[in-house]
Amino acid sequence: MNVFVIGIGLIGGSMAIDIKDKYKNAVIFGIDTNEIHLKTALRLKIVDHTAGLKDLSKADIVIVALPVDSTINVLTEVLSKIHDQAVVFDVGSTKQLICESLSEHPKRKNYVATHPIAGTEFSGPTSAIAGLFKNKTNILCEIKKTDSVILNKAKKMFRKLGMKLIYMDPVTHDKHIAYCSHLSHACSFMLGKTVIKKSKNEKGILDLAGSGFASTVRLAKSSPAMWTPIFMQNKENLIEALDEFIANLYNFRHILISGEDENLYNEMKNANRIKQILIDIDN
Amino acid sequence: MNVFVIGIGLIGGSMAIDIKDKYKNAVIFGIDTNEIHLKTALRLKIVDHTAGLKDLSKADIVIVALPVDSTINVLTEVLSKIHDQAVVFDVGSTKQLICESLSEHPKRKNYVATHPIAGTEFSGPTSAIAGLFKNKTNILCEIKKTDSVILNKAKKMFRKLGMKLIYMDPVTHDKHIAYCSHLSHACSFMLGKTVIKKSKNEKGILDLAGSGFASTVRLAKSSPAMWTPIFMQNKENLIEALDEFIANLYNFRHILISGEDENLYNEMKNANRIKQILIDIDN
Image (cartoon, rainbow over all chains, first blue to last red; front, side, top):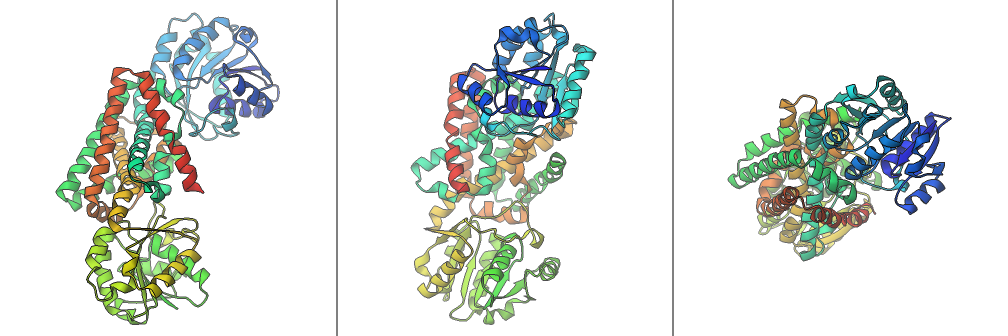
């Protein structure tokens, strides 16, 4: 089974590791414009061989794990080069524009629109880890546009990697993920910016940072190359989410100024319900 | 050595555990208005005895680990009841108002204004853990107002618990901590609120939440009873921090709408510098 991974970073690399573990007959081919990443992936035995787009005719599975803007162009090319039974999927954090771009492609039926909710704030092949997808949610979009045999092959593989599958249309996916992921990232980047800026004028301010601060700004370590096209592709939904978040911050500010202790208490008591939600994520 | 802990929660309880471990002659007396917390602390052997404020004359060390509004009243009473050599400190996340309130107290010299940067999002005696303070920063304020013998006793104990000590005036403390801690908490509470509210109208939105979301909303699990008076006491500094954060979110929103990819990339690249800061926190 020839598995081509285009983009040997955190997600592509971690997926390669797990596929090699679960499919003893899998041969992993790595494609990346970053030569250093490719060499690192070979050295770490994440991939067996390096390859180019020209070799795609022998691929049985193609994983496109690139920033979401490159994903659109590369998927179009990949689909044109593969054989009829090949399974192709991406792992991007946006789905609407990618699905729209491929909707008329003659090989649309070979493509599975995929978004595994897994990752860390790190990037590159050295951050690839085994078991990253275990017990994680994997969202598949527009599955009726995929050939059923190809879809079943993909689903079987995702389940072997330990993922729970849920199904969604791309428009709903992008709207929901704006709230549950993209807003958190935007918030964390801007929180990091706010404190870094202040620390320039007020020396020693960061001596007071503890684990709470670390937790809220963790995502501000994420890759700008990956996140720029995600934010841009999903800007309408993200702006809606940002506006609601900013309105809530203003309301919080108003309660503070008014000195309404009880209101402030209730705001936090209500937000405490996140406890149950987080338990559900962990399980 | 009689150690009185007033408020047997996460911080008071964890400190009691470490003091018992490091000082074999320590006898821990617990004071709490919550009878269930007191019984739990006894059962878990976090405290040796329960006590009341009337017993404070036999205290050698008094730790006030209460919400910061109660702290002010209780500290005033504690200082009036202790003997001349007793060490008294609080662990509150604000320092300015507490220090001001005690500035004219005849026993001010027995008090050490203390803020250990340690904790979790949990509360109550069952969340108390050993080693919570190891390698954590402990901020001491206005140390010149403390008797040098009493101050040295306290410093020795904090170091035995593994803490690094830094010194700061209360006004600077409250300003800096607004950025490094209080803003993170306010942001996390409001992020939780935004997504919970959206999830009421859009079923299934939280199925898409992953570890990134969990990290940014972790602090929204924190105790409203503890955080209401912290936010209120430090509202001026927190509003300044909130305003800068909101301005940065608006700027981010503007860049999104304008479609300025390069600006968006640079915003994130700059925020990435938080990596180095977080490494420093972890070490």
